[in-house]
Amino acid sequence: MRYIAKVLSPGDDWSTRHSVLAIARRTAALINALSADEPTPDAVADVLRAHGEEVSRPLSAHDVCTLRSAASLLREVFTAGDADTAARIINGLLQRSSGALRLTSHGGNTPWHPHLDSDDDAPWDEWFLASSCLALTVLLWDRQRSPGGLCASAGCPNVYLTQGSGPSRRYCSRRCATRERVAAHRRGAGHSPHPPAAHRP
Image (cartoon, rainbow, N blue to C red; front, top):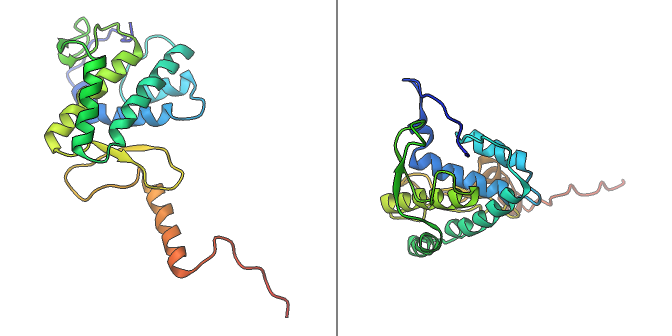
């Protein structure tokens, strides 16, 4: 099984860690991690654990390969650019990859919650694609806008999740936003990226 059996304490925050927004954030984080040149099983497992997922057995190279394929499909939702295109892509992914909507508690080890994969023991890639599509579907439905985007910073391949109903986001992180702001300032000020050579008197 992917899930480690555990008893939930009264103060357990499972529902918060597995909210629609949390799952969508996990989706973006996994897409970014799996887009690396050679993501290792341990690195991918670390991302899963960081987002509240239980990894009961080590991921294999095959698991990572199939997860990368799923991530490539999900990336198209983030690069769609508008709600209509994103909805069409999500609908296509749901038709080809999801099972019937069902509720599960993983044998009583978690609160009841919806799944679209075929079984609690479904392969990692099937679970990733189905759970991500479910979360992205709800976000698009709730906000009536594309659930995410591709970082506008030159050379950055990361995707990001659209935040609320405020101004449109363009960058995956403050680091990328700051880098682009500094670059734009330099261009506007006519600065060269390299200091000019010193002139001899």
